[in-house]
Image 1 (spheres, rainbow, N blue to C red):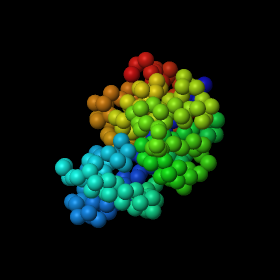
Image 2 (cartoon, rainbow, N blue to C red):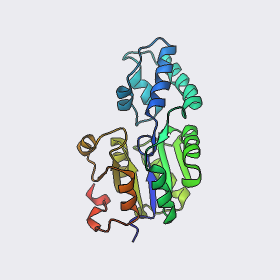
Image 3 (cartoon, helix red, strand yellow):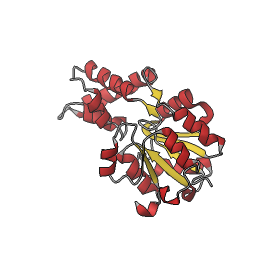
Image 4 (cartoon, rainbow, N blue to C red):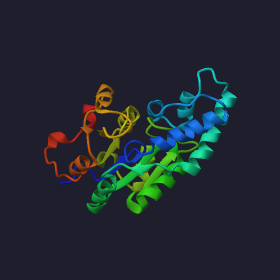
Length: 231
């Protein structure tokens, strides 16, 4: 028996390793305005709440709003042209998506990255493996609000009680809770297992192969299935 008929994935840090391209575009925008660069580890800590907050965290404290807005615009323009330079799926992710498709599980991606980038990256790296990809857009609240998840379920024609959310961050744990979905947290992305546990993760998966086995019912222990009521 397959535990779920629908899986909603986060993108950055869950399916794609986008960190270096995000850092490069961040530092491009900062350098353009003669602001100090940020390290890869700093950018890792800054991501998860959308590019607006990424840039807000990256600019020095006290930066005028107008200058921050210009940095954000320059980041967006640079990232759209350079978001595939060093980005790649994590090892085993394509096999994970193929395996889920083979057993008929519906797949969607929801992200706080702006919508054009989300759709473009999903098309480039996943092709038709993922049917629905939703990013930040006007009028749709960002995660951890449930809006993007509920919209994805609607577009897939899926019911919440049949779905599980998979992500790599504290934002994803909160998003799943706010959406009424159980959450599987992955430790290969931007946050490690210790941090995820501190943030209330109920179940942490260490590899895409392990996740595939769980989601396709190869792990038959009912206790391994997370329940929203436990969150």
